[in-house]
Image 1 (cartoon, rainbow, N blue to C red):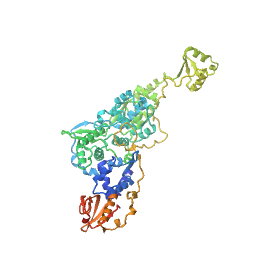
Image 2 (cartoon, rainbow, N blue to C red):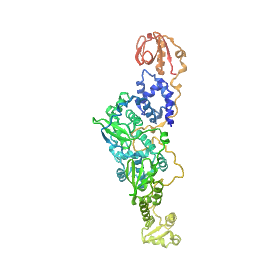
Image 3 (cartoon, one colour):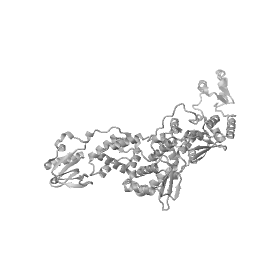
Image 4 (cartoon, rainbow, N blue to C red):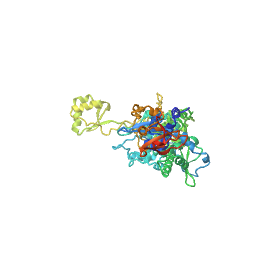
Length: 630
């Protein structure tokens, strides 16, 4: 099934006229999805588009949703191509310039970085840690050093995976770059949020995330990585888009020469704002990240050239990913208490195992091990041994071996024979006050809710706490506010039971606040939906004679000068007839001459397919007319 967003994009592109298409493709080549610099566009297209034609083309592109607009706080507007369009534009306009036919037999002699385990599993592994152990924040709002150390031990990511990306992120003095990236990913997916003193899981988003296929998860993470962790330089953006297109077409079949991709960009003018060395570094840095996230592997040839090979296709249309039948196989419980989880298994199964078993390995097959310690830890967070056993019975493809079943039952029976119970202790400052409480006439009424266990101590029924506080206050023994040492409620491991309702469809949103600042930041600005009235681009239109733009006529040099000045003011083309041939001239300024001259460009036409910079005097043409954009 075709992607409806892409269909709408292609329909809009088909409606562009020659001038609008010229502006759009030039903007794509020079800026990618970075803000358009209109002055640079005018300079690039001088002699091909007049100023008004450029402005009208921008309005038309905005109306077709091919350009988006935001504005800064002081009102300045910023135009940009939506990042979702880059791969489609690359496929239509840049990929045909890249010849892969001669490179299918080339390959890397050395694998420098193998693809690490799938990033989707890493996301659930870190989320499970947060669900079980919590993630409190310091007074400065940062994650505690002890927790950071534990995250560093858990994750397969390393700081070296992000070399060459020059990522900018919050608190670099506190967070290693790989921890900042994995936490930023959780925030960007909407799976966690920051509260006053801790980071918590957003359960409804997690529920919808677990409903996605592994392929859809990978696709969402890939798009976030493209948006947030790559260089914002247009040349680097084009490299990522071109590599993505190659990943869609040749995944798993060939090594892609990174130098070849960079050369294609440079030769076709797609990397004008970055040096060749910077582009090569950005390309290698991006390939390192993809290997770290499990999308492919980085290699090199004997001559030092870098290559990349995708493990699986990336950035496929979302609808195709949804319509594809996925195996959704179950798990395999082994006699040695190991549980094997195929890649095709639902991530909901992985989530439960993360809560009750120990992760041993994650590759093509993820392996967990059932242990007494993890089973007891799961029980402390609401995942009871009986629930785990029922779940294993339901999803194990080959059943649960008898020795595993008996041992789990025994471990469960050992749990709860003794328990710790949290109670509220009332401590009196001295024996006199404690005796006064016990001797109070009303003590006999609330004795059952307040048991004396020592000279200065009572155990208080927490359900009657407010009532007892009132009694103590009336006696002149008002307790201090708050309860010392009272811990928050025990965390409950989320989403361990069947959901009564279907999860809400997962929705990837750009612009969620995370840790990393690098990448596209246009979402911070206010969106602009309306477009200005075209008539505002031609002030005083009704005040000029109609004959100036409706007829080709000869004019006195003074009137001709007025018409040229009007064309310059409106930034439109001037039609002039030279030796019986009518041509279009884009005037820029009036200069000295006999009696005056005009500087500008002859627009490309049948006589010349390139613009010609020229200076003319009135005697060089006969008839003339103002040419209004259609």
